[in-house]
Image 1 (cartoon, rainbow, N blue to C red):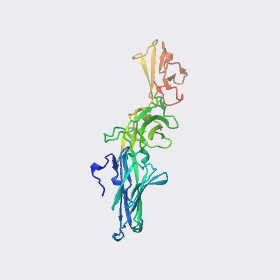
Image 2: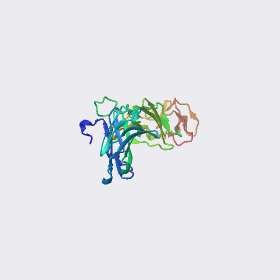
Image 3: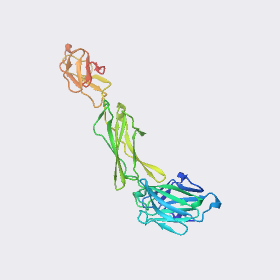
Image 4: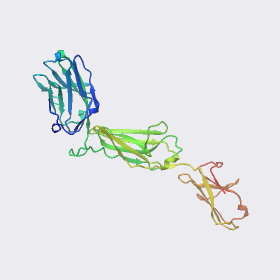
Length: 350
């Protein structure tokens, strides 16, 4: 049998032992292959094809082995072997890059210097003539190392870059508004982006959360840009939004988080307070009185002042100044944000 000790196996090729499956079989031959093999770009993965003939009396004197590669629905033979000859087919992508070793228990295909386009299905066909025949397949996944091969751990795609909107977002917007965009570049296989609010994932929800994704590919590497649209509420003024990039490496999924951002939320005042700024203590005739109004809206709204059941008074933003007051200025004063109705309950009064 071929050697499989550590000193003969390319350490950058990683199989998926948990994905072992038994392929279909015809007549009296059983065939076993891994469902998938994962390898880093430039490595030399090994594809095992083990077979056995179920009846000892039918052990064939001749066994023909063929390897095929399947791409976009069609398949091309890359190797043929039997008891008398071993032949790598000419004029294929693998004519100079594969090596096949076989014995009575199976066949081993080694793909040298694997490339991104080698993400295909490789088919092993065993034909023992009257003893039976069978075929199985292994899918190859290719991963990219962004660092030198001397380092065993793969570098992630470029760290995600998040950009929040600069303008404020109103809670009165009927549709979800753009909150931020997130981009990661030069990944392979294609990375995915997930959005988070206060460390909890956001799932697309009609009328509440939209996620728009744009994927581009350049020289076999993927860049992904994701835009988060979200219907804000007042409580979101303290929320933190972030994105996370997830990507496959052999045997696991890894993630890289972005920094978090905060958005400016615009909302109307729900409470208004009015008080006398000056003078301190009782007001005497001839005093100049300054009344100040404040709400809890964002951004702070200018206010309209009036004396109860009277016309609006001239004021400056959130301050009303009454000069040289007299008894005729006595009464109940009110203020309300300019963006609410005159008869609203949201008002300050003193």
